[in-house]
Image 1 (cartoon, rainbow, N blue to C red):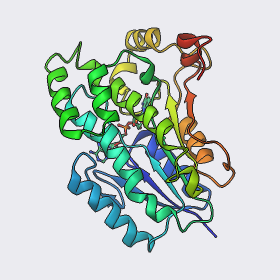
Image 2 (cartoon, helix red, strand yellow; image 1 turned 90 degrees about the vertical axis):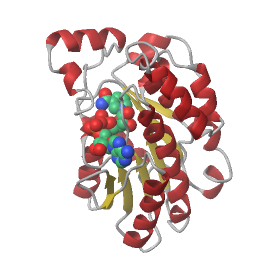
Image 3 (cartoon, rainbow, N blue to C red; image 1 turned 135 degrees about the vertical axis):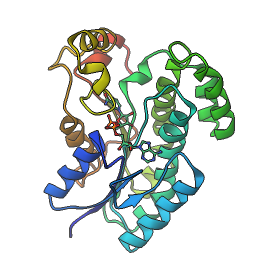
Image 4 (cartoon, protein in one colour; image 1 turned 120 degrees about the vertical axis):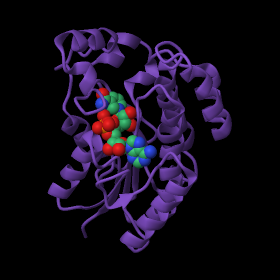
Length: 260
Ligand SMILES: NC(=O)c1ccc[n+]([C@@H]2O[C@H](COP(=O)([O-])OP(=O)(O)OC[C@H]3O[C@@H](n4cnc5c(N)ncnc54)[C@H](O)[C@@H]3O)[C@@H](O)[C@H]2O)c1
């Protein structure tokens, strides 16, 4: 039987490429985004997160096979905390019950190689504690200086997500329920999120200085979509709690010998 998947961030970039790839393979995809999607919901709000779960339950008839939590923001604002961390966790937690009826349920989220960049320890701690009010307040403080402390917000949300996957994946809720939970960590991907930075030679060079990609350079969103599709597909029976870098080598260059 054809699989039914939910893809957040389905209107653009990596989410759009993932939706299109799964559909080409004959799957049914319920796309979620702020606009141009089957389910239009704002994942930065409690209301939007509830609406997502309600709408997916109705559209799917109560059972889905995979969740791809892709939606995200890169702005140096507190909204980035609300969407990237709490919106993603709410998507996975909220849709998890709908996965339980699938013969091969899967869950994948999109972190980033930015998790290796400088972050704000206090914010990451608040994310680990699932303290949304505290995390948003801390982000408001960081956002006052967008170019310096504000720039720590995005990396902090992605580090928080990678740690969340490590802490959750082996528990009864995921592995114990037969659900592989994993993350991908892209390098620089050519999407609307990065378009302003990579549209000039100078911008591209500057970005590649901090995110070195010796293997094939900046990637198209389909590259990430293919990895997501595998992690969220039937063939993935034993990959558990991994943060898979699809980054042209930036993790290797930056971390060298360091392994988990
Ligand atoms: N592009 C990159 O270089 C790169 C690198 C590493 C990780 N990522 C991550 O990949 C994911 C997808 O990014 P992209 O590059 O495709 O960006 P994108 O801007 O093309 O797409 C992001 C999508 O998320 C949606 N979204 C944003 N806020 C939302 C909200 N409140 N509720 C619902 N949907 C919302 C947007 O509307 C948009 O369609 C993000 O999590 C991003 O952090 C991107």
